Image (cartoon, rainbow, N blue to C red):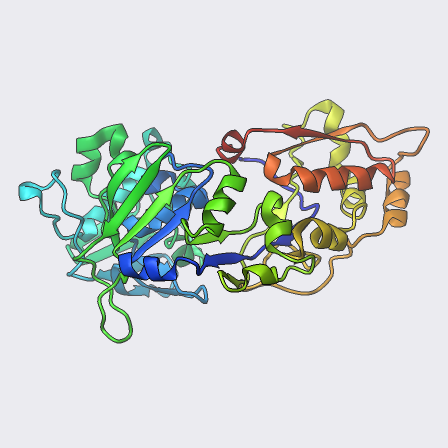
Length: 432
């Protein structure tokens, strides 16, 4: 959404649950199985805007660079790169052993080598308005007006790619790690057209083997993948990835408990109390079947408030007052919310928007901790009281967060703020 957001509250969630009950079966078949309850609409990296799409797309495609586990930028198809002293010119030197998956779009059905010109094409495709990629902004810093470059890109030979920026932009290298910047072959896009998202051809560790909408998606090992581990073993280790599409979270949980899927990312509210203790630890009854791994999820949940005065409806302009926004943030107890509604799977982001695990994270308190008395004082300073009540606020969310907003609704009512909850379908909300 192209609108300004004001932080009202945020917290970081982190949880990975791995099934151990089917360990023998999983190792024997060497297939990793997980469920995507939200469904997968496209495997075209141009539209990989949420985790449901990013996870499989990242197994099928590669970019110039990629993030390491510690979030440093490391080589991928580009084996090395240099940046000019003025920060405007990025030169990437590509590997010569990276090939697209075998596909009927190529001569004899054999995947050809990925070259620098493929990146020129792929970046131009993202920047083309007819593609309607939500990732256009990632490459907007490229100097598209330079006559010596094509959309700010130039390939002097198959193994060299030069990118020209309009102005220095230090985060640019990190942005190139995003799936929008993955390389695609022009032959496949031309051949499949709008159906390329259901017939992806990439350079990644897996290729698409089977996709039955609403039922199953299977990725198979790419035997020609270029990456190796530190011992020289060719990646990937797995033979396949199998993705199911069970929409009901309770049914998904039962499949996991019965060993039919291998992991859960996060725990739905319906199964949380069964799987976890109040303090967020694994229920001892599952200790022989399940392994729980926690760590920074690099995710911040927040309430977004539109503060663009040109777009805000006249009956909501009171939200432009910073005192009102602060009062909202200070009116509900985030510590208790995390404890009782999320079993401490996360914590209040009192130190700001940057999550733990990312550079820039700080424990400094921004002064928005729970303080209902001060919240009421701020409302009074803004001109609102029992005699002049603050207009009702409507917040839109999905059923995934309904319990949180019902808690917030109750807490806000205690300081005189009326909150109306508008529950939207998950898919519609996530595609905004």
